[in-house]
Image (cartoon, rainbow, N blue to C red; front, side, top):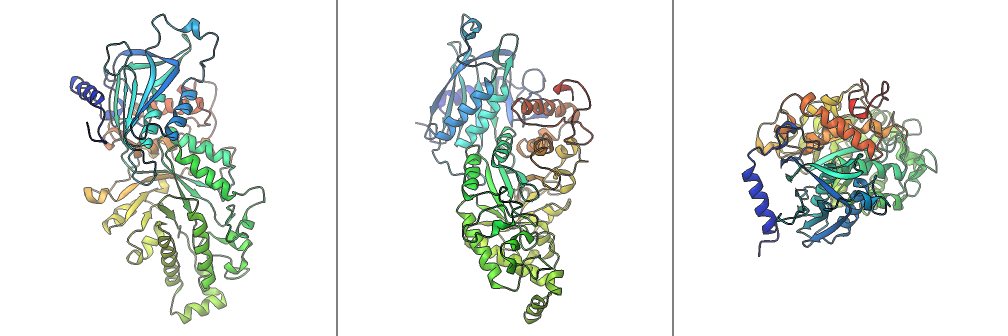
Length: 548
């Protein structure tokens, strides 16, 4: 009997045989497949794959067959049902024309076997998302005789399902779903464990269903962290049971998230293999907190940063984090710490006196506040994430567990990892989606490991994140601001570096990104044209989705 983490012997033998017989195995090689150099219209590009020259038909009544300790997971079954509805959106099992369409010999692919070795569904950073996908003709001679996904975890199976769905295309002439360039043999895994999208619900409120739609679209690009920037100076929309007046800082009583809403978002995300990292930015960006608790302000006329001189400020932060910890199981928690102007502290009488009593400057108090907030988060079994200003100002004082979140510019992650800190790459010059002058290719070619040559230090860069700040985005335009540029970063974070860095991106990546943008449109995601001068602007005139 093979060990629990190894593939069933038949599948392993077939995969090894396929790789031996196909010397044209692609390791992402600029998008080329194993069948003569054609582009593989998959996004993000798998780590290794071969393709053939056959076209296979897929039965609209595609059946699910499961195996392994985790194959029977509800996460797997629900995902299969979701993807089946996507794949067969133009043809249903109950169509009266199906009998006329079906060939006399039947369909080539009649079932999808999903084997998940582990029954553990815990979703934490670094969970195994690898998978193997084999798509071969069911002709009675094949060892497999079906499409097969194998993964160590349910989350790897989800990634394999996404790839399988992208292989399936609807043929309007035959009104059937086909897999072209078969047989396919794919071995895939992400390059980085952390592949994020920040969503800002303070500058504009997004209804729960809109957030769910964004989570769905993230799963299509294999992004796996929603960084939920929940509150900021402008509004505090989240319910906090221990401090029920906090959400008086919401714009209106209709633009709020209940505890139940937050639970629903976290669970919806988990079922798509997506972590939700909450952010409560302190001590700056917090004016809205004082709408319900004005004692948090240094004064009524000087409202942020939060009052560092009062122990009750930190009591409230502790209670807030305790309530949030019950909702968000992800091990990382973002404490912000950016753009802190301490003038309110040094100009408000009672805070100024406290600083003098403790022999502190405004900068000292900033460090004191950040470190104390970190201690609170760590006491609740969280790993703290802070924006880079904290590292730039007092790296020697940060908790060694701190993850430094780069945003101001290049060169921060190399400095952070050199001091032993982990780092998240979000250089605003390329990965801030609200910067509408940044074209897709600059997003695509941005490299999180730039300036880091030591392999041991490279491992400290856990990944990257594109940031959808909400000052100029709301429900009416958020998706076309996110997509398709977020997908460009998603491939950089998922696919092998030699694949995303080889050749001319206008040849190796642009045709595939155009195709993926149209795939998103077909799935109801309002992704903007790829090559617009200003992202999220509409088409410049009539034309095909694939030509814009």
